[in-house]
Every structure is written in C-alpha cells, then in structure tokens.
Image (cartoon, rainbow, N blue to C red; front, side):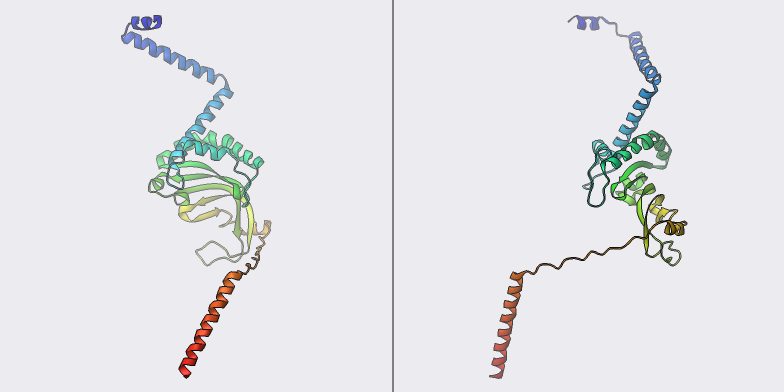
Length: 259
C-alpha cells in the first residue's frame, strides 16, 4: 500500500521520464563497462550471443523432412549431442567433442562477421558435421534458392569442406569432363565445392590428381557374396502340384483329340 502511494505520488512529466531514461542508460553503461573490464566475461557474452543468433537463424531457414522449420533447439541439439557410432562409420565421442570445440572456438567467433559480409548478397553461412565421412565443413546457402523451395546441394553455392572422400585416378574422361575412371583412392583433404557449377573436390580432382594418386593407396573393391536364399518348401510343393495338374489336363486334352 505504501509502495502504491509512493508511485502515485510521483510527478508525471517530461523531467521524470528523462530521469528514468538517464537512470536506465546509466545502468546499461555500468553493465557494459563491467563486462568490458573483464575480457573472459566479454568473450563469453559474445560467444553466447553468436551461438544463439546462429541457432535461431538456421532454425528458421532450414527445415525438416516434412517441411516444418528445424527450430533453434534442434539446431543446438544436432551440434552438441553425440548420436553414437553408426554402422556406416559414425565417429566416436572423443572425435565428436573435438568437432564441437572447433564449431565453438573457430566458426562461432567468425559467424557474425560472415553474416555481415554475406547478407548483402542474400547468402547465409552454416557449419555442418559429416560423421560418416569423418569431417566437417562451412556451407553457404543462397536464401533466394531457399525461398524457392530448394534444399540441400540445390540451395548451396559454396562449400569449404574437410572430410574423407574417394577420388578416381585412372584414365581421364574425354574433354571437357575433368574426371577420371577407376581405380580410386580414399583421402581426407580440405577442398572446395561449387554445387551450382558442378565443381567438386577442388583442387585435387582438377589439378592435383596425379599427386593424390602417388601418395594414397588405392581402394580395394570388396564384393560381398550373398548367401543363397533358403528354399521355400511350401511354394515348391504348390509349384509341383500346379505343374502336375497342368500336365494331367494336357494329357486329357491330347486323348480327347485322338478320340
């Protein structure tokens, strides 16, 4: 009651609003100076703001398989949570933690600057993990292509990746195709992809193919022999019975013709 009386007793006017604004500005300035005076705190605030902005932006731009927005929480989960070692070659917890550290310590400090540079060109930058290929990469999407409903590589214009891939090192294809025939080698090297220009694994595929072939072991193609399927005796009996009936009918028709 006393607080309400005190509030109602306050004069309402321009001077009062100015005093409130001045007090608020002074408080914000004090907080900013306190943060600036402590570099670790300043770095933590900057990093948290960068991560939050990244998760919100990617959560709105990228979508799930059903077309619904990915959402900031799902983006953060995909970057932090280890999904386990899959049969397809997913990495272990130690390697996953290393990639999480690289995402936070290398990509996130640069993310606000990347957005400022790419925004005038209607582009956006994202960081992707490739557990099956044991690597990660920087992906730049065209927002215009995203708005047109395109996804994946159809919306990407630039990729700076570092992961495992196979490269053919045999005879060259006829010009202008820069590719080669098998055999292939497996390597883990940084490379540039330009999906809209059909450029993959640059510069190794285009200019340093011979060096890759000389420094990497060829991939041994293993062909797994599939076991013979177990015979289905029930179907076999039905087939034999059907053949028997057909044979009997054919015999009766032949006898009728002779008679």
